[in-house]
Length: 226
Image 1: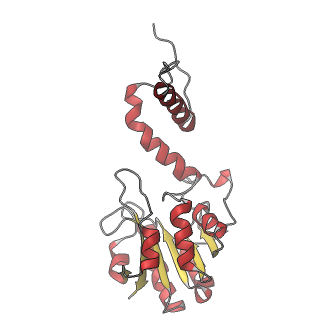
Image 2 (image 1 turned 180 degrees about the horizontal axis):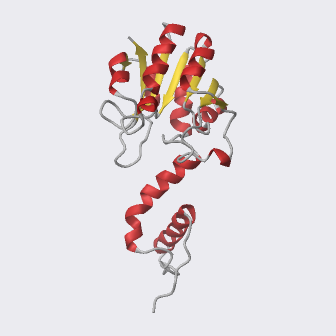
Image 3 (image 1 turned 45 degrees about the vertical axis):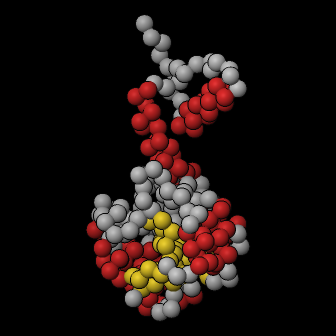
């Protein structure tokens, strides 16, 4: 009769796996592999990503590419809409960027707002934020705006925010983090409305360092509304 295993958290499971891998590297026999079974391996990476999303961000925020992005931004003022718990905004602030983070907090089923914010995040819809602060904003940041699987009003968020930003600042730029057309972020009207810029070498230095999850095809892009 098999013993009932204690269910570990995702982080504890990963830590236990790393301990066993370290042991085998040192020619030591691992104490046990009884903390999970082989059928759970298929779900582990998915669980890791969900845990990161819940506590941090859809995008793999990391200092290497954020610091390059911050160097490109310089002293320009940024507004992030749909900022979640503010992980990206916090990373940018750590690098000296002037960024205001906002979020409607409507995606509570995926983002653990009760777990605390990385940095202050104003409770505003994307449209409210752009209407209030767009005139004083040089760069609008859209990180994983809702896409084709979201409700109609939600998947239009990126398009509406971009259009409103164009009215407030015709020369403003957009930093877009997500998948491209037919992906799981933004919608076709957004991609019809913006022009991507791939000739900025300093921005591209940040974009090249951006990493994504396995089978997720998001990237770091520079754009403007046409």
